[in-house]
Image (cartoon, rainbow, N blue to C red; front, side, top):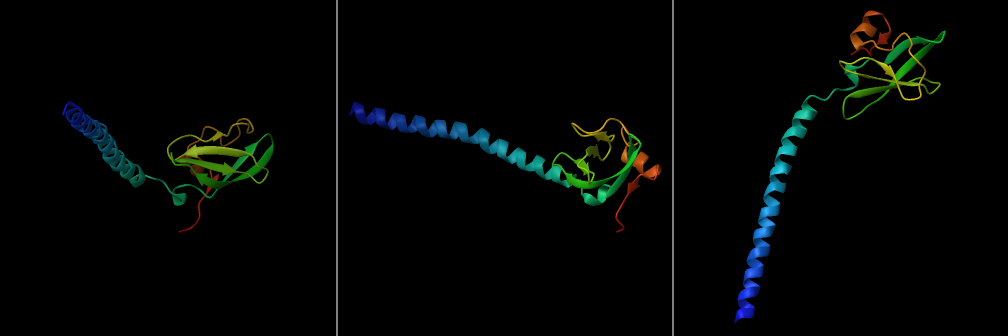
Length: 124
Protein backbone atom coordinates (compact mmCIF):
# COMPACT_ATOMS: atom_id res chain seq x y z
CA UNK A 1 0.00 0.00 0.00
CA UNK A 2 2.87 2.32 0.80
CA UNK A 3 4.23 1.81 -2.73
CA UNK A 4 0.89 2.88 -4.26
CA UNK A 5 0.73 5.97 -2.04
CA UNK A 6 4.25 7.07 -3.04
CA UNK A 7 3.37 6.59 -6.72
CA UNK A 8 0.31 8.84 -6.30
CA UNK A 9 2.41 11.44 -4.47
CA UNK A 10 4.95 11.35 -7.28
CA UNK A 11 2.21 11.96 -9.87
CA UNK A 12 0.85 14.89 -7.88
CA UNK A 13 4.33 16.37 -7.51
CA UNK A 14 5.08 15.98 -11.22
CA UNK A 15 1.71 17.53 -12.11
CA UNK A 16 2.37 20.43 -9.74
CA UNK A 17 5.86 20.88 -11.19
CA UNK A 18 4.45 20.97 -14.72
CA UNK A 19 1.90 23.62 -13.73
CA UNK A 20 4.50 25.71 -11.91
CA UNK A 21 6.83 25.61 -14.92
CA UNK A 22 4.18 26.17 -17.60
CA UNK A 23 2.38 29.14 -16.02
CA UNK A 24 5.32 31.57 -16.20
CA UNK A 25 6.09 30.30 -19.69
CA UNK A 26 2.55 31.06 -20.81
CA UNK A 27 2.81 34.49 -19.22
CA UNK A 28 6.03 35.21 -21.08
CA UNK A 29 4.49 34.01 -24.33
CA UNK A 30 1.51 36.31 -23.77
CA UNK A 31 3.67 39.37 -23.10
CA UNK A 32 6.06 38.63 -25.95
CA UNK A 33 3.09 38.43 -28.31
CA UNK A 34 1.78 41.80 -27.13
CA UNK A 35 5.16 43.48 -27.41
CA UNK A 36 5.90 41.95 -30.80
CA UNK A 37 2.66 43.42 -32.17
CA UNK A 38 3.64 46.82 -30.80
CA UNK A 39 7.06 46.54 -32.41
CA UNK A 40 5.54 45.61 -35.76
CA UNK A 41 3.10 48.50 -35.56
CA UNK A 42 6.06 50.90 -35.47
CA UNK A 43 8.04 49.12 -38.19
CA UNK A 44 9.47 51.24 -40.93
CA UNK A 45 9.24 50.30 -44.57
CA UNK A 46 11.06 50.98 -47.80
CA UNK A 47 8.91 54.06 -48.48
CA UNK A 48 10.25 55.71 -45.31
CA UNK A 49 13.82 55.70 -46.64
CA UNK A 50 15.31 57.22 -49.78
CA UNK A 51 15.88 54.77 -52.61
CA UNK A 52 19.25 56.34 -53.42
CA UNK A 53 21.71 58.46 -51.46
CA UNK A 54 24.43 60.43 -53.26
CA UNK A 55 27.68 60.86 -51.30
CA UNK A 56 31.13 62.22 -52.06
CA UNK A 57 34.06 60.50 -50.43
CA UNK A 58 37.74 60.76 -51.22
CA UNK A 59 37.09 62.84 -54.33
CA UNK A 60 34.67 60.30 -55.85
CA UNK A 61 30.89 60.60 -56.22
CA UNK A 62 29.04 57.47 -55.26
CA UNK A 63 25.43 56.34 -55.40
CA UNK A 64 24.30 54.16 -52.50
CA UNK A 65 21.15 52.14 -53.11
CA UNK A 66 18.77 50.96 -50.40
CA UNK A 67 19.54 47.28 -49.94
CA UNK A 68 17.63 46.16 -46.84
CA UNK A 69 16.03 47.25 -43.60
CA UNK A 70 16.89 45.11 -40.59
CA UNK A 71 14.40 44.08 -37.91
CA UNK A 72 15.66 46.84 -35.64
CA UNK A 73 15.05 49.56 -38.26
CA UNK A 74 18.55 50.03 -39.64
CA UNK A 75 18.60 50.73 -43.37
CA UNK A 76 21.62 49.35 -45.22
CA UNK A 77 22.80 51.11 -48.38
CA UNK A 78 25.25 49.56 -50.84
CA UNK A 79 27.12 51.14 -53.75
CA UNK A 80 27.80 49.28 -57.01
CA UNK A 81 31.43 48.89 -55.93
CA UNK A 82 30.25 47.12 -52.73
CA UNK A 83 30.82 49.92 -50.24
CA UNK A 84 28.12 50.14 -47.60
CA UNK A 85 26.63 52.52 -45.11
CA UNK A 86 23.78 52.48 -42.61
CA UNK A 87 21.19 54.91 -41.30
CA UNK A 88 18.13 54.72 -39.04
CA UNK A 89 14.93 56.68 -39.48
CA UNK A 90 15.99 59.25 -36.84
CA UNK A 91 19.73 58.56 -36.62
CA UNK A 92 22.79 59.69 -38.50
CA UNK A 93 24.32 57.98 -41.52
CA UNK A 94 27.60 56.18 -41.00
CA UNK A 95 29.86 53.96 -43.07
CA UNK A 96 29.48 50.25 -42.45
CA UNK A 97 32.28 48.23 -40.92
CA UNK A 98 35.21 48.24 -43.31
CA UNK A 99 33.67 51.04 -45.39
CA UNK A 100 35.43 54.19 -46.46
CA UNK A 101 35.98 56.95 -43.96
CA UNK A 102 33.74 59.96 -43.47
CA UNK A 103 32.30 61.46 -46.61
CA UNK A 104 29.62 64.02 -47.38
CA UNK A 105 26.89 61.74 -45.95
CA UNK A 106 28.55 60.65 -42.74
CA UNK A 107 26.88 62.00 -39.61
CA UNK A 108 23.84 63.42 -41.45
CA UNK A 109 20.25 62.46 -40.68
CA UNK A 110 17.80 61.56 -43.43
CA UNK A 111 16.29 65.03 -43.16
CA UNK A 112 19.72 66.64 -43.59
CA UNK A 113 20.47 64.41 -46.58
CA UNK A 114 17.09 65.35 -48.10
CA UNK A 115 17.69 69.08 -47.48
CA UNK A 116 21.16 68.86 -49.05
CA UNK A 117 19.69 67.20 -52.17
CA UNK A 118 21.56 63.95 -51.48
CA UNK A 119 18.52 61.74 -50.81
CA UNK A 120 16.29 60.56 -53.65
CA UNK A 121 12.92 58.96 -52.96
CA UNK A 122 10.74 56.88 -55.23
CA UNK A 123 7.58 58.70 -56.28
CA UNK A 124 4.41 57.37 -54.72
